Image 1: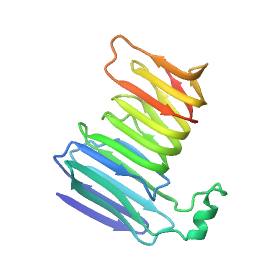
Image 2: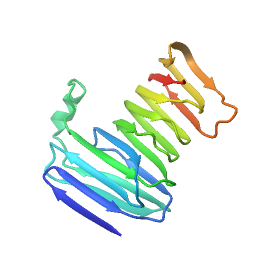
Image 3: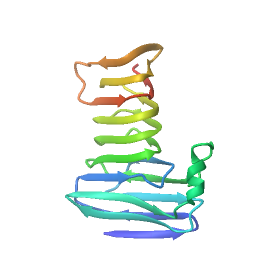
Image 4: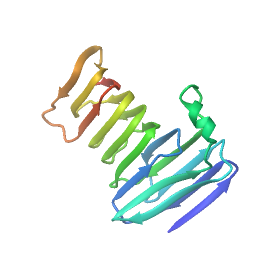
Amino acid sequence: MTWSSFSQKKVLKKFTSNLKEITILTEGLDDFVLENSDTNFIEITLFAKNSDEQHIGVQEKNNEIQIEFKLDKIQEKEIIFRKFITERLQRANAIIKVPKGKKVIVFGNNVDIESKDFKNDLKIYIENGIVKLNEIKANTLLKLYAGLVYASTKDVNVYVISNNGKIKVDTVFYQKKYQKKEPNAINKLTITSLKANIFLTAQ
């Protein structure tokens, strides 16, 4: 079961699936928010200010749901200058709501991500971005080259490596590595990075 609706610069797709794993490809997005759905529907809302054509691609293959975003390509000369400006050019973002029980894997390059106390197992693989994990409520794995990471890790096992970035837990700084084991914890946060600055709240 699936349906879509369209309005100016906004697309909504809503559907159900029995598959238990979702892969999100973030190419074309500047940022997106991931949260749990209150229903059995997977709900994707796409906003794109600089794109006249915008589509949400969904397909089922290899026993997983794959979500991608198809937007107008910005001009090549704009891509060249993208790294020199502070405002992103695509100005596209999405909100993705997922029912409980479905594992989510995210792939991307330069993208900001916010996980709103997500209750599903989550894996994120990106090059660079601001990642706000909020309260960790399921097993979470994050691998990134550089960026900023924020998370609340109360009653969670934690394993963090950032070779050339800062690791700050509450008010204390750690060099390259931080590890915490909670005797009764059932969830684990793992972060691996070369240059990201990581800020954790443990209390």
